[in-house]
Image (tube, rainbow, N blue to C red; front, side, top):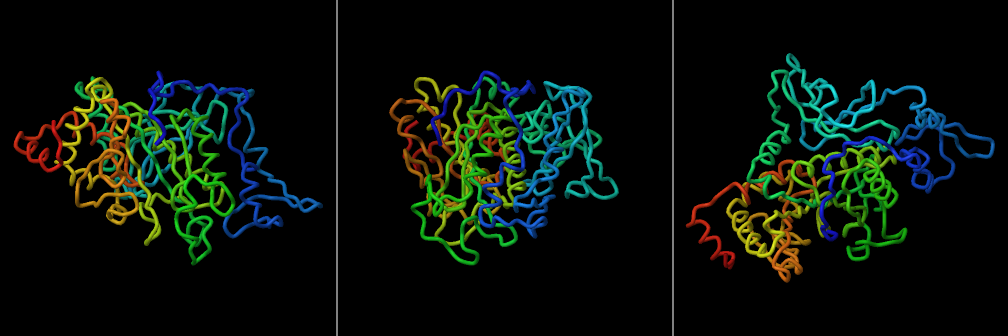
Amino acid sequence: MAQILAPPTQWRIRSTKTSPNASPITSNMWSSLMLRQNKKVAPISSTKFRVLAIKSDGSTINRLEGLLNLDVSPYTDKTIAEYIWIGGTGVDVRSKSRTISKPVEHPSELPKWNYDGSSTGQAPGEDSEVILYPQAIFRDPFRGGNHILVICDAYTPAGEPIPTNKRYRAAEIFSNPKVQAEIPWYGIEQEYTLLQTNVNWPLGWPVGGYPGPQGPYYCSAGADKSFGRDISDAHYKACLYAGINISGTNGEVMPGQWEYQVGPSVGIEAGDHIWASRYILERITEQAGVVLTLDPKPIAGDWNGAGAHTNYSTKSMREDGGFEVIKKAILNLSLRHKDHISAYGEGNERRLTGKHETASINTFSWGVANRGCSIRVGRDTEKNGKGYLEDRRPASNMDPYVVTALLAETTLLWEPTLEAEALAAQKLALKV
């Protein structure tokens, strides 16, 4: 991950004002991606429906583009709020739109809403109403103007969090005075894989075949090595526009796989920003006619999996003498290894094999500058005697609310017995 800097002063986006020079993502941005392989584009494609007219010179006009890009602000104060929530699988993102009478600057100004939970696997048909509570707002990079994206969590009509609402428990942990006093920072490295539509095979790969072995693709440039850069760059700018604390992006080891980093984020903000960034990525790949997967091992064999390495520090870790605090945190993490693994994403056993820059899922380990360990500590942290640790175990499909809250709980709130701590220290060769 890129160097972790101090988080921004403003931890949550409260302003929805947009620069007059900014513009939302439009469909013509994808011309280089969509029209690259075949300049004669039919009005209706089997993989992507687009309302197009063919001009006499063979070029095309998107008949909806003018309407999609309408600026309604000179005519009304009303704005569009896209309410976003996590679906029943715990990985899928759902959303729907509503009109708000005027621009808003804080989630508390927004009304609660409801949806049919029986259609998302979150409620029975006979009692299907689920209530959305607005929790964080971001500028909408697709509609522009004063329109917003709204991250919500979900409750029963009685006000109880539904089982898939992991944000509720995370908010409880981050509101604990002990946790608040330590101001936990997170930097999450979100990896993802782009797939060709209808064939479930990575972008840039020959259908049913394989590219050359890994090696030339990581952080590469060139049409024979880098596949999907338009999507990665569009996502980067869209996140910046939205107010997401995105800090970098790069091509990954497996061709067709990319990574972006979000952070440093403080507390619950880390989960809000990752979920908002995932939603934006889903929308961009939708426009591009490419499929997004967060599967931790999309292709079996000698190919890297996809993770969500989570960089973590507390106030005590960042201060002088912090390396000792980091080692104590590593001890606690070793003693709750199974608890963390069970919460770090579905299918992670296919990724954490001890190969391809991973540790074995069954064994906890740590090391300095060692990417084959469960927990990696950077050289600078060791040298400076303070800094952060990197938890390399989370899968790409992990829930960031769960991972960030569990790290805080294990290192700040959970206390092992002295005997267990001593045995773990001896096993890990840690002097604490």
